[in-house]
Length: 244
Image (cartoon, rainbow, N blue to C red; front, top):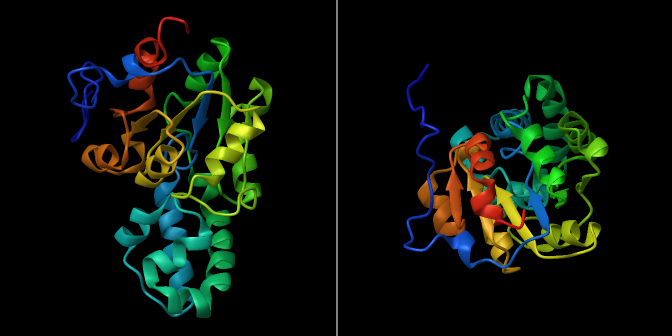
């Protein structure tokens, strides 16, 4: 059955270059994943939680603007959407309230279709996998458990593991270091993922599951782009090369 806006899996979106970017990569041995919006369908719950937090502090920020910044860490989120004065006066309270509000929404968050299968397939190919998130430990730990990360031997990061969040590359570097370094590939859903990854010269794969457009992801540095994780799974041989 098709729904309005459905994208056929028979025609995955890819960057429009004459040469497949994957063919130009050195083989990778580590795959770094963003979590929110990439593996779990949580971006809109985060936007609502932030909206409620701002309202509770007497501020109104349009939900669309909040959604556009999902993917940056809480350390810079408030100033990005509401300015430095809001950060100075309300930043700590807003972050605390956002966490409280998201606690009430987390049961509504579902894994994105194909997430567990993708992680398991990468591990089956003997690739190291690490989840690079600046989310609250209790949230990320819960998502990691649901994704089967402990059983698969997958590491993950949390808020506080890096000095600066995306689009700075610190968190991705911490994630790579956590699995012993190597030749990494970044998979994400937001412009911030790719702006950060490109500062480390990592190859990148984008998915449209976070609600950001193909054109924006490409402009931020996504080498190839897929509508969903299922399409990415179907093209892993192309993306990873024959060696995997």
